[in-house]
Image 1 (cartoon, rainbow, N blue to C red):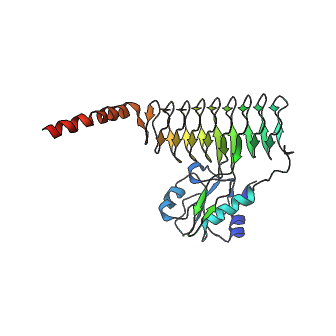
Image 2 (cartoon, rainbow, N blue to C red):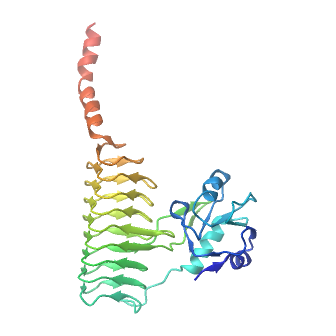
Length: 307
């Protein structure tokens, strides 16, 4: 239900600026905000980005001019207020049964023994969930999805804020959404978003031991081989292929149709339609040129010594 900004200000001791008559309809990090969402910033470096985002309500720790149509909540600890809002309105729901009464499983789905299904999980028709899978809600699993044994869907986000002498854990309040005809191999881990959704697009295929970080979005018909790791909030567009043990950093975008060769490390966004290799990953042709030049180095050094 929408929450009036006046209620939020009263509950968390914040001062209101701007439009005081609107209500919050969602909460999200700056990367995925939509109109009606709450977001926050606790460093002047990111104030402008927050104010110019689609978010309607921004929690800040300094007074600043409020853009038209938006609302500012000014408080001492924006992160703490943001985290408390998520905890209150999207609390962790602990398992109380192997299959929670709120879960909705289509009669045509197959769920083997020892599967654990948490609160507010929906599983579509003809989906096959093998033994010893854990699905923690909230999560939406489409139709004709195949989930192999040992996989965990809905793990808590690995997301911490650095304090002076410790790390403060962010409350995990997002969902996992898996679209139709996705295949997920054994022992995979798919984390929920911190406040937004982690999404696996229709027709994508994950091999064994693939890790999908919090809030990541995997497009349609992507192919992820064994031991691929995708950092939080990273976006893979449609038809991306990642071969074995590719590691992709957080908060970047991989363009449609990109192919990343095995054991590559991706630290920045890549354009689609190309093949990449190396650490850091670069276009394959460019990488081969460097290797060819490197092979000639001993002969060049020997020639220089002779001269």
